[in-house]
Length: 205
Image (cartoon, rainbow, N blue to C red; front, side, top):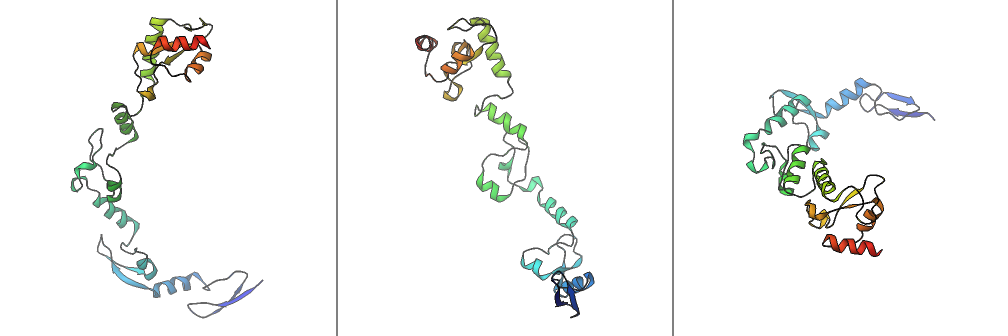
């Protein structure tokens, strides 16, 4: 199918398989320049041509992307911002948008600082593995490396928390127990406050 139109800039007839507004790229640029006004850049103060449709959308304040980025970086000076936006872990000054300051109360400069802060305040366990490794070694040194219920020891046994960490359980040795994989799965479904209570319940199964 062949379409016949007229150029919006020079009124020249256009024919082709696609619908086009202009006969050439020159006409497109010339037509857009007619709908632009002269403005002054907010950063370098040089004059440039800004399109009306861009100004209506809230743009057309800078002559180039370089000036826009330099202006935004100038607004991000740490000394001119609220000191409450510092990193909660290392106290490094940060830049945050006003909308984020209203939404959040604690800020971090990196994911590493966020993890360290949450571990210090006991919001999450230490996922580095060192804390759990020390707990497992200490329990196996005292209780041995075989299951305390069925005396199974053909492979490595698990270290179980009698009171789980999610229920305010500690990594103390008195809260630990050496179990085989089967009894460990069963112990996860049993609620107990002491080692003796958990052992009696597992022996009844």
